[in-house]
Image (cartoon, rainbow, N blue to C red; front, top):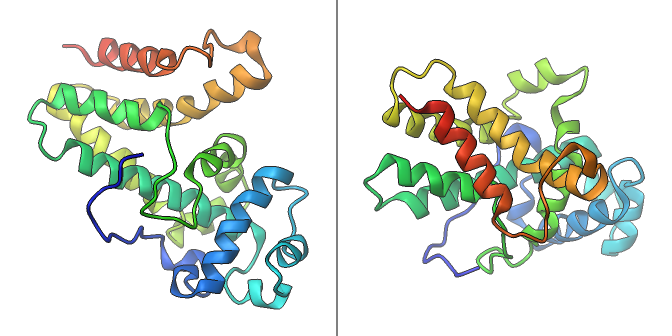
Length: 226
């Protein structure tokens, strides 16, 4: 993707990690190869032992950054949502029309992405595959309430809140903006998953690049119309 003129650091909630992986080259290496290995193996088969072998380090070193592979997954998903928020803020900062900002937001949520060279150690295209396949496992756990209290999902909530605010600019009387935005956020990934693995559950053809964006945009705009 085109480089954005900034030295911004993508923020992930501190409670997710023990040591900020962005604070060292070793931490960045763990994130870089953690993304590649988790996408390759899936969360269930992924282990810190395998990641240590891939990075040429030790399990003990990885445990200095993350308490568990669940927390590493939370970090990766949180980073992705924060990166989308960053893109949304940048892309809509000079757009006056709330409807056009909403269209941009839906395109950022569900459209094709490219690797962002401002964050060279993270392959966003590969990370999106993890989001599609694994993101539900971040909160569909017995510990979800405790994780929520710890702030694990703030980046996701923050992104959704920005889009909720745009919807309320368009139609302040619309009663279900948070429900609609969370539905769209999840659908942006579930529809891709269905198209790849359970095609009878969707009409989306991944070979038609803008079809998912068009579907979600039409659904949202029709739903919130006054």
